[in-house]
Length: 112
Length: 115
Image (cartoon, rainbow over all chains, first blue to last red; front, side):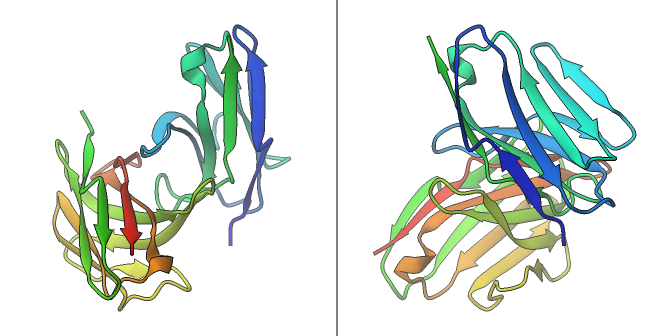
């Protein structure tokens, strides 16, 4: 089955700097790659997603890139703000939101 | 739009009792819902796929007789943890896929503590 590896497990950046989180997946049949933000005691919130027919997608300060050949995808957050502090999860699936396989999570801390 | 509500947000129950967790899609229909379990500082692990009007599909290692799932309508799925034990204590999260789309929306989670 699919296996998703996420790095780093923790990331600390200065406010205003950029943060990058990387994920690799194992199954080349996976075609949907969402990123979720989870705050303490809450459920995950979709922040951006990308499908395998696209190499990059951007939404304001957030961007995701996908390299199908290397089977990895990354989340880029620019101009980080304290409210970006949270745990971020990547995921992969073979059919939209069906049976998502999650990465291990990255705890992002933005230092003021 | 696309709000998924779980109830209760937290529950404490005694060992041996059963507890029911509800997952509702408030403003959309969801033919498919998923139930996840998350231990502290860990990732989400898929427990089962719940399809409206049919039996749930459980992931390997998840006891279907212990975690009963019912998806009787297009807006409600329930997870019942039967004969709960302390090791069942966890954060349970549901997600609902908007019918006709491939987007999943997550509930806020339910923290279950079995004492």
